[in-house]
Length: 554
Image 1 (tube, rainbow, N blue to C red):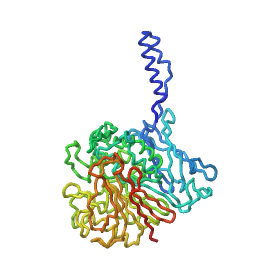
Image 2: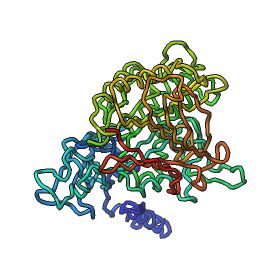
Image 3: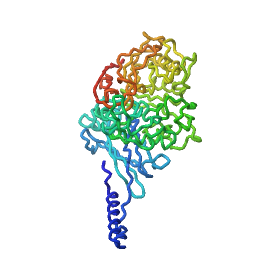
Image 4: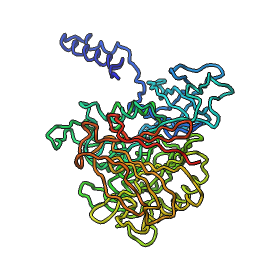
């Protein structure tokens, strides 16, 4: 989008007239600019728009203004060609939202409710101040299919519902790890091309499985790769060092929004965002005191409070506890706030978005003979209850850390729950064992775990036939990522829950750049009318490298 505006034109004209006046030495010429009428500055949306946590009847609408102003959203139902639906099939609503202020870094959210299911919407967002309505930015999104397909507002539309097929079919993508290991936005290569590849699949939503930013990874203007090629990053002041201040954490999110591919995708594809470690600092846990000379603030609780505020300001998440207004952390200290949540996506699909960071116990070797925390008891109880009660065909558990992959934190300690001991569950494994056992006792079927974090892609099948712990039903875990970060892996596996590595693919060497897209990965799920759940793992060029078709158990 061009930055050449009426205001730019006026400023250029003023400068020219002023120089002409000086050259002529005349008072009249020097005074001439005062005769030009002032053009009022209208608010813009400098980092685009996004939607999130979209269900059958609701959506969170997000944007950032260039200054203080009130957010306004206009929603209109459209058909498959993008034309606005009128009459009995139409739906139009204008919603005045909250004020965007400096306290929220000029971000604002609207939680739009009461929307018709299975409907595609044209979205228009802008901000209004004393100068009137500002720049309008447009996007689209679709609500999830409802229990009765092909109908809303009392009628049908030629077998289509708001321009969407009258069916329960839908698709989505997932990945993690954006702008890590110093690999930022390289416009010479087309920016973060993995987002464009995901966007091309035309998904109904996107799960960002954590590490939405790398607050602990400085981004330099140039990086020399292993083969001698030079990677050139866009840089800003806030990414020049590890983030410690609220301004620096906010700057990390602003930086990622500079990528045109990401902005384009977020304008069209709702996001389900998860919180992991790099939104604060690597492998952190509550109460940790850092031993890292890059930081002047070593108390992780203080850093996490700032990182969480910036993350919640910038993510379109719907849980009421995550829609708090900034400044509510007591004394700037990190306090757990619920961001785990269920996103109902119609009769075929429920998404359970976990938080495996907020309630995490300290990183040890993981071999305690008693349960230590990865989810926390409250979240464990919530997950068991909600999955038991789910009537959806498929229950997708979006986890920001993997189950059976060993993720070291130093020479001895473990970052995730796997502990290098293939025997009976210990430490954090005991929490997950309790969850899996509860699912079996309740007869819950069709559970799939999706994750990222480890910077390679994989398909794992877990079965009690191969496990030390046997009180669970078999299930699949699929791993994808990174989407624009260094590649790593594959990692060793822990045998406690009997994982079989059916497929894995990683980069050629640790920390390899995303240059050719071959070592960057995302997952794609196509859920058909008959409930078939087709998972494909793809690289950042869009090439499918693995596919698994899952048939639901009835």
